[in-house]
Image 1 (cartoon, rainbow over the protein chains, first blue to last red):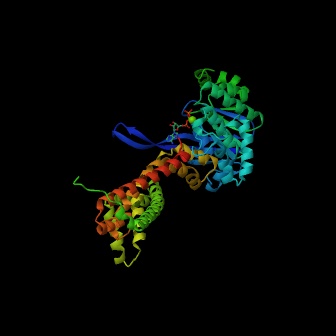
Image 2 (cartoon, rainbow over the protein chains, first blue to last red):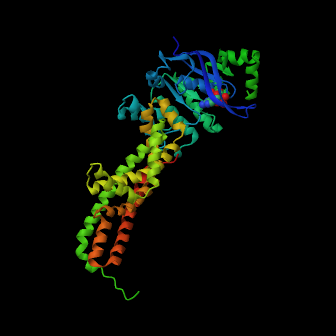
Image 3 (cartoon, each protein chain N blue to C red):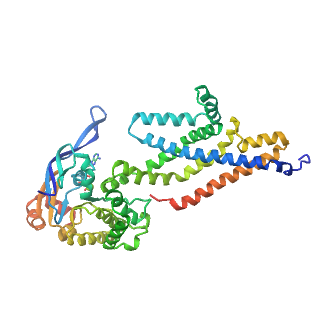
Length: 258
Length: 221
Ligand SMILES: Nc1ncnc2c1ncn2[C@@H]1O[C@H](COP(=O)(O)OP(=O)(O)OP(=O)(O)O)[C@@H](O)[C@H]1O
Ligand SMILES: [Mg+2]
């Protein structure tokens, strides 16, 4: 059984649409994911590619229970995202990092890391601090223990956010374009951390436009377009066979300069 | 100046009375600050809640308080409650009335604090596994209270100044003492001069403490 099973889910958002005839905005629904299925095992790095607006973030948010799904089901480690009581456990299983990270502004780095494990896992403060130190060391920011979010660069904030997610000891990390808001130098700092984690066997599901990352670190590549899965392949197949044979993929890769 | 000579010495005999007044004023202020803070917080949360009833109650509460004079609110409780068979001490009435009165501006500033907490904070906490309630108590409230702290303290300064109205219900707080002493000693000029200074000191102390706390807790979003 796969660790994350996305079983033919449908997800739509209520939106307002301009009705030409009636000359006013009317309620409408935008279906982002339609009958979408995919499985993830707890292994390696899966990179999720696709043009903007195809529902990559929506998929990750559905897995983490941040969005409710209309149809179908997602089973994370045996738990359904439809079950409100399991939501906490699911989020513990799948840590998530966003493009725009928000560190809690009223807490320093150390407290940002220890807050969740202390309140949710009942970890003792001492153990939490110890674990936090290990993780801060791993992301190369042990010296920033006492810093506040406004004293950190964007790249440092993302590295802290990764450490904060890892504090919960998740089985997988969901990463949503976590380097998109960073300049190239900070991007490579963050990617280096991810590469390191991957080599230690941390399982990741990452949306990214960093092709170098996809080529070096990913084991599996998913390509989405307009809410459906176009391709699910090993990295090698993706960058050889699929890029030649699938027009959508070829033009996408060309477009982002690969 | 008509050759008026200031004479504070004649007031010395009333210094004990003044001191009692000061103590009573402090009691009124501290008591009502506590009430107005928690009530303001509750009202702000109600105002931001999904429940229409809660939002309605909070809105009406705040509007009524903001658009009526405090003296009338005070009389309403002091003379109104006994008619309903509820007898409470003038001090208790003053603390409650002033607390309720300042809950309105406190609600407003705490509410702006709550509104400044963007969805990103809610999602970051949710993604870590915090329940809605934990997100609120551990993240949203601590952030918004810190953001609201400065305007809250200026509300508290206003509260201190407004507390002088409480002499209207026979309370011998410092303004009440001043009225009495001025009738007895016939030295209103000196007495009210002292009072102006005392209120300045009160509000200065509030701001001083507030600034010290603010330095500790201030955050940037
Ligand atoms: N809360 C929402 N309400 C309405 N529409 C939404 C909402 N969230 C997303 N959408 C729409 O759903 C579609 C998919 O969005 P999503 O963020 O999943 O795309 P994406 O693949 O992550 O794109 P990008 O690469 O730009 O991040 C978009 O058309 C977006 O406008
Ligand atoms: Mg996205």
